Image 1 (cartoon, one colour):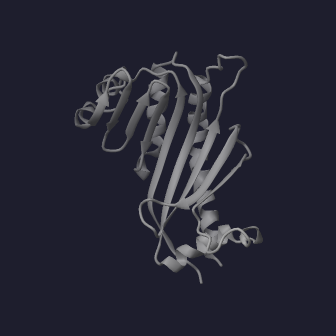
Image 2: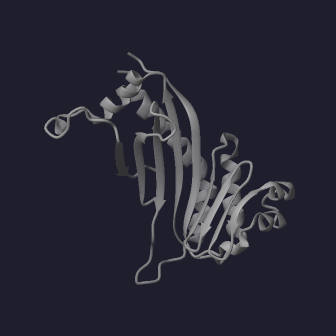
Amino acid sequence: MEAQAERVETHVSIVALGGFNPAILHPVWFSVNNLIPEEEAEKANIEIVNREIAVFQTDWFGLQVLGDRFVVDTRDLAKHMPLRDLAIGTFQLLEHTPIHSFGLNAQYHWRFETEKEMDQLRKHYLTGKSWDNLLDDANLGSLSVTGKRNECNADCINIKIDESNLNKLVARVSVNEHYGYKGSGSVPENRIDDFRETLKDGWDGFLKYTENVTAAILGECCEE
């Protein structure tokens, strides 16, 4: 049987770890600096912006910032490149911000038509004698694999397959491209230049790679 799956959601995000000032990262700051239109800033749904945390959502992207963590994300397929430009533009302005590590992330949610088809995914990635004496009726739960990829200087690529929280017939494939701490001693190297250059030169390639990962994972199990 060849299973059929429909993509129901795509979620991409850019994460940086370092030292940030949440208080300034208000929608008005983004509009004043021509990173988003004034009208978009006025319509933003602001959850909180203070010295410790900034959280708001616009029509197409969300922002969450703590003192040590910066995240922008979108679920709009047409806004993957604008999200990259927003992150680059933010840290061109905040050029002295310390960024010690960062990651590019994509999640793809695929819905199967029947439980039997979803079960093909579970069985394919849990098939193997190693489980025979350990589990009966093994379910997918979560499977994580870590490695590297050609033409990418990330420290590692993390791929995870699990069941989405959207629906019991929805599988989620997550890909994380991780760039870790560098330097020696207690003070890590500031990688803000690496961060901006990776987004500029590698974001599009990362997204294409993640699409290929998802297609290969679903294609392999669905052809059985």
